[in-house]
Length: 287
Length: 221
Image 1 (cartoon, helix red, strand yellow):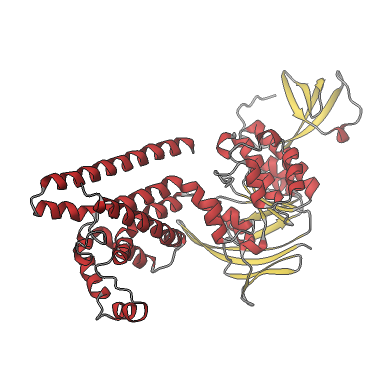
Image 2 (cartoon, rainbow over the protein chains, first blue to last red):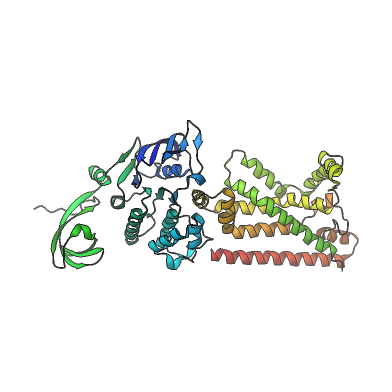
């Protein structure tokens, strides 16, 4: 067990105050998505773990070392906790180049080099953040958080500002980096497909309780937040990551992984299952 | 033409601005970061010179600096320092008088930066001082420049305080703004006009340059 916490904090919101209560144990390498309505305290939980906010009562320990214990009056400063944190606004230092941003976080040159390569930022390393696009800034923020050699990585809605196609790429990158560095990751997200793709655990914060689930997908299905549809498609083209399929009258590009598919070729007819978000019925025909 | 009052004004403004940078940055940083309940008291004290008649500040300094007061007596007895009617006294008074002009722009600049910048740096293990120096100050250059220029210009324009505690000792406390008044009183309009014109020109050039540089800095950011 890497992270063990049991925390309470009173949150003052415009619509009244409420209590955030969280209890969980995480293993090294876990990827936890934090899911719940706005203003419920998801970001606050990340801030408490990083030491940027303080819980009212409870305790928090990482690798058996105590970071916070209200009874014993222990509260380790954020400087000593040193977690990797990707802020919602990325918080890149505008006065520093990309390389300087990473170097400021940690001077481990070999790791910086490796991460610049993995995040495809090598060509941009001498540019300032303002010269980069949103997606590029996001990659810098992610690389910078990983340069901080911490067992914990906190992501506060890292993909919310990106458009759909960029989100897909970033999800792949986050999954790949998680595979490489195995940091215990907590990610605030509202996006159900994103959570299913990335997380192995799900922390749902609701009005009265906070529960940690082992299978994010099962939770969303149970709550009727996710549907499975079955379709038949004809393979029109295959590339490294995507299939071009003819499904009914429509052509669809769908991401796939080679390992799960086995021997296929153009012209093969396959049946596939996809997760889709529930939507309204927009047309009904009696059969 | 006697340049001495003008040079003295520049010297006073330069030293005052330098001291204010050293004193003002920590005060501004403290005020910007603090959410203490009594913060407003410190803010009010720092801003007092903005609304106080300069003669009031001068009057109290006159009393505090005098050899009969606790501070003035202490300084005179142990350090042989006499702040009344001396250049050192003017520097001290100018620092108090121009303090809000340095602190307020820097405080506003710091408060306008997103909190996530310093928080991100804290999670990287950086101390408050490192964060101020490497992350915050480099990102508020226009505010720093404004603070420096306003303090400098305000010190040059100082009149009431200097009159109260400086007198007009040539080469020691006779600064340009006092010299203008002095020359007018002796009906020496040509010399008065000389000082006035130089002050007008310098002030305009300094402010013009500041606005120009700030416009360029803000388009760059």
